[in-house]
Length: 315
Image (cartoon, rainbow, N blue to C red):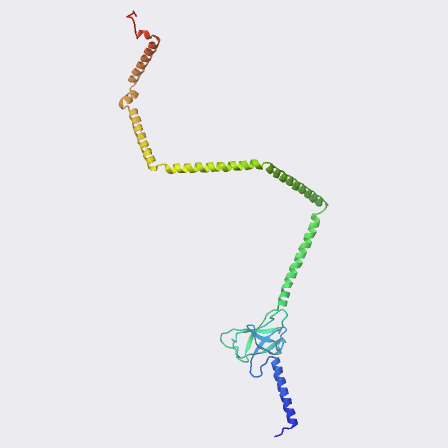
């Protein structure tokens, strides 16, 4: 069967159109051979979102924005209904949130599905929750406002401090400050001179100080030796014998106390002497007579001793 040239041309044209459509859809991110799930999200502000913007889950592209439809409420308020296509292999809860975000500083807006996995599972055509994350520039802009106000307040404070400083540092105060600085310089010079003198004194007396330190070391060594000997002496003491000596001394003291008590009571010869006044006076008189006799004996020994070599002689 012979095919006419017209039929060939028509077939080529149809194939070209089909190839163009497939390529166009592929460039848009659509797969012509599988059917994606469609979800709807409502936003008051699409914030730079556009058709073919990526839809991501956990950083991976799972779909794209298919259409952005502006709507108007009865009160005249405008909102946007965003239609997105998502690969049906990805399942998530209907409670998941679709967030408009900016992945990088200079990146375009994308939709990020903050997936939840509880029931019910989102079905094709369901309406999902929406949220908008501020971009980095918007966040910086929001922070610049308060910072700018604070900076203005700081500048006002600095200006006020400058005015007060000008009032404080008048001519009289400047002269006093100059005098104070001069005095401080003089004090610093005096301290420097004193330091030099101290260094010179230390240098000149360095040998003496060394001798003093050497003597101190010798004294410490002698002290340590004495302490060591004392420790050895303390260790050599027989504690048991010392305790026995102390006990014997206590017994002797007890006996002495008993003798003293008996004397005080007039018991025994010594006690009678101490208590009998007549006997005491007799002893005193006898002692006095004996002293007189000894005195006379020393003065006149011939009265009591008669020694003759050749015979008796008259007294």
